[in-house]
Length: 183
Image (cartoon, rainbow, N blue to C red; front, side):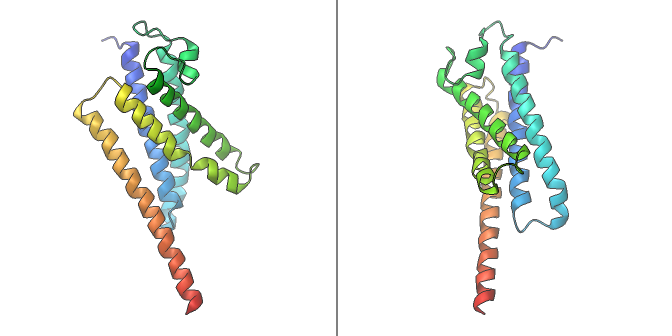
């Protein structure tokens, strides 16, 4: 069985999307005050590893498109946002997601050299990068099987839940501190 470049592109796109989701989800759980401390030691390396592997798979996703003979992308159409003749806007969103993930990973590796406040601001790009990848895959991706739509919907619901869990547990923790100070 021969796997075409288009199938490699689809598989790597879905894989990178799944890894991006896992990295963000693990990051939310790791940074939530209600997550047991025993889990945090496992979540942090998982968060970093899935982020980096996901980024490498995103690069593969773009490079493999250069070898697809059906669409025939040029390097600048893949790696410069909104330069593609094929689905200019949607391809550009995918490229922006790539650069967003790269910026997040770069700032994390340089965390000790940049101020924590700057690192946190850059890290806030993780959800927009996910959203750009979601839109890119949902509307430009060629596979709209129920399982793929379930992947997109399920990961979105899980990220919203993890985000809300983190925010609510942080708010409850702050309210507990205020009550303890007043009491």
